[in-house]
Amino acid sequence: MSGRVIVITSGKGGVGKTTASANIGVALATSGASVALVDMDIGLRNLDILMGLENRVVYNLVDVVEERCKLRQALVKDKKLPNLSLLPAAQTRDKSAVDADQMKALCEELKSMYDFVLVDSPAGIEQGFQNAVAGAEEAIVITTPEMSAVRDADRIIGLLEARKDEIKEYRLVLNRYRPTMVQNNDMMSVDDVLEILSVKLLGVVPEDEEIIVSTNKGEPVSGTDNVRSGLAYRNIAKRIRGEEVPIMDLEVKNPSWMSRIVSFFNPTVRV
Amino acid sequence: MQLRIFEWFSQTKQDGARSTAKDRMRNMLTHDRLELPAGRLESLEEELVAVVSRYFELDKDTTQFDLQQYERRASLIANFRLLRSKC
Ligand SMILES: Nc1ncnc2c1ncn2[C@@H]1O[C@H](COP(=O)(O)OP(=O)(O)O)[C@@H](O)[C@H]1O
Ligand SMILES: [Mg+2]
Image (cartoon, rainbow over all chains, first blue to last red; front, side, top):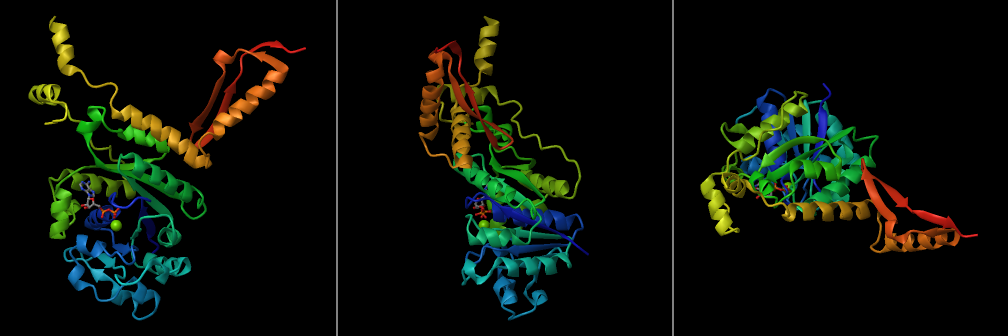
């Protein structure tokens, strides 16, 4: 077996890399693929929490690289999906504990065991980022429609372009999208961001409180029906597998007259 | 009258933060990608105008000097309207 290694990266912190990693992982595994999630945010371990697996972590990625345990011993199986595993980051070490060659070797080994290896990258463009992309052939760049996040995404795209020989494809996920604000011309639209970055779109995830609820439960939303953000992640997973799925219709169809009147008299209130 | 009311209800803000953000973003990324410091383009324009002016009389009002992006690559677009040659 030779799986696909996909790094999930952004430049800016807090834009939704870890949330996307967990959700895309769950969605891919639900559709039957075998998936390894790799938490490369060494020193700031998060992915285990989002997956609800924090109590099952025994060994971590640094233990594997430093040969304190076998790879299989460090992999934590998901509670519900037997074909989904997590390789946790070390919480008490820093990014220099691993180098790019070790990361490449690790991804090679994981690739021979799983259909998909999703690498959750740390924020920044330094060594942590370089390590996270080292073993990958594809990248998902994630941003929100805010200027600082888009700027950092552009920087990341520049770095991925410079690695053309290794990174064969990269696509954008636009996260925390607010259709109402776009409709009111208060925020950049999907097309605005795509035009500015000249990048291919993998998907759009709406701003959704359910994400916070699901993080607290340790059950990613993509495993739940009837949640908009969950559907968005499931569609992203389908596109990764090569299916053609139209971008979810996020427009607010008919803002009620009542809300228009309210926002006319009080522009800061949007109902 | 009926139409006016309809327009009033269906109007959306045209000059929102969206277009400002987009313009600022474009300009910022053009500079980021080229590692171009602020003011550098302006000094190039000044020098070019000076050079061309040694050879031609220029219509300064219509001079166009701009960086445009296409697929993440910038092009320098300079357009000098010439009036006549200097000797
Ligand atoms: N679509 C979304 N809607 C609402 N909140 C979100 C969304 N995506 C992410 N978040 C929240 O944003 C915060 C940062 O997300 P996280 O995935 O940890 O970012 P990163 O890994 O890039 O630092 C978290 O609190 C998360 O719950
Ligand atoms: Mg993270």
